[in-house]
Image (cartoon, rainbow, N blue to C red; front, side, top):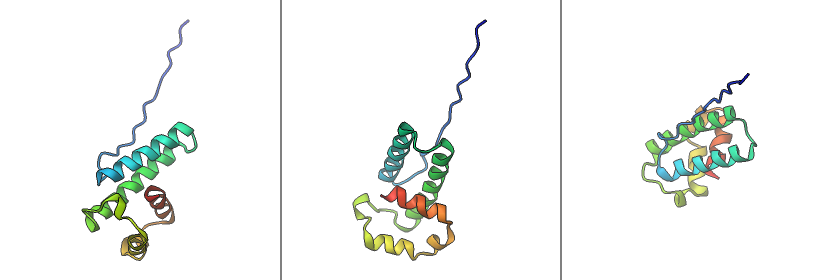
Length: 100
């Protein structure tokens, strides 16, 4: 007989990310990693969640920042912020990946 195949649809919501350039960069990163199969979906979903936290930090502390304004000085400010010390090692690693 015929067998029915079930396809599961997974979603990663990036709509809440801002600024737009950051959302686009995270989207490209996720698509690249998915297309290469280099990271599991669960890991990418986790990194998207971390990107949302970083996005909120940017929105609260640097609301008008543009991608070309992220430089060494700004990263040092972020590294020494209370927010940076309040997040775990995996969050820090993922934030750095998003900024690269």
